[in-house]
Image 1: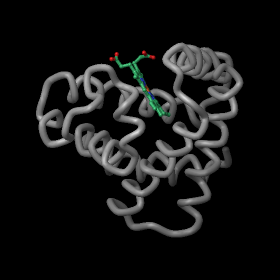
Image 2: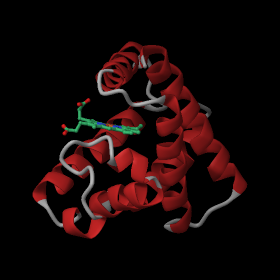
Image 3: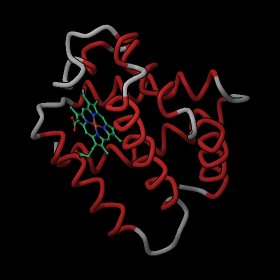
Length: 143
Ligand code: HEM
């Protein structure tokens, strides 16, 4: 990713990365089929699960994963390490039957959250699309 895109992704991510529970809530609200994949959360109302520790723990795992990926962006010689963690994520999600279409839904939901919690423009949107493309290229190869 070019340096200006890395900076745009890091800056906008830093604005929302502490909103762990709110991010997962936004994802589940927009795409109930994602919530339905979680044995712990399937069939329950979002209001009844969003305050639980299981919800907070999972929200924290997802956000931490993004923080780890984003920390690697723009740093020299990290390609093999990034590829390894993305491949592992693809494999663990393949084993749960998660589809590419659901990963695309997740992408849309996270972008909406980012957009509504940052000063936004077309360059920032493009930077995030590039970051997701790079991430999903590896995940999808393992899915
Ligand atoms: C577990 C991240 C998308 C369903 C996890 C874990 C992480 C994670 C870090 C825990 C470690 C592991 O088991 O691999 C992500 C990221 C995503 C994403 C970064 C998008 C880029 C999705 C989607 C679904 C999903 C789209 C469902 C449609 C699950 C389930 C678990 C899980 C069911 C197991 C939860 C449990 O332990 O009970 N995810 N995930 N994930 N993810 Fe994802």
